[in-house]
Length: 183
Image (cartoon, rainbow, N blue to C red):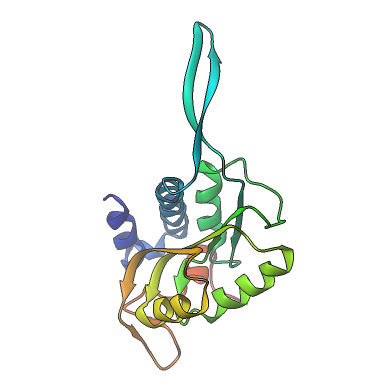
């Protein structure tokens, strides 16, 4: 899909020089993932009053909570918010949790974030969303997350991590590319 174009541009060293375009592509991927994840929600038919009559419409029943790993995840989160703008409070019991991080290198940050969120209750279902994941992170999360209640969404799967736990070929530091180098 068009998702591949946006991932390719995120990886392209020449296009990466434009941080505004980088952030917008991360947002676009968040929008696409929000749409794809929404296909997994529970829906029911509601009668909607239009100016000319009643229209039965399938609308989502899930109460959504969106959480993200900060800095690099901010534009990704914004993309999700553009489509899922009626998100719920941070209490998780009985809700659908979408937890996002643009890059999953080892998976340990995602696991720690998930464990911290569990202090707010246990969600009915968890959607882990990432743009690029290493094979190691995917395997790690498949072992650590409750498999009967978790769906992992990634746009690209890379095979390797280097000695510094950077994804190879990856794209570099997503936070620096989106917002400039850290001071």
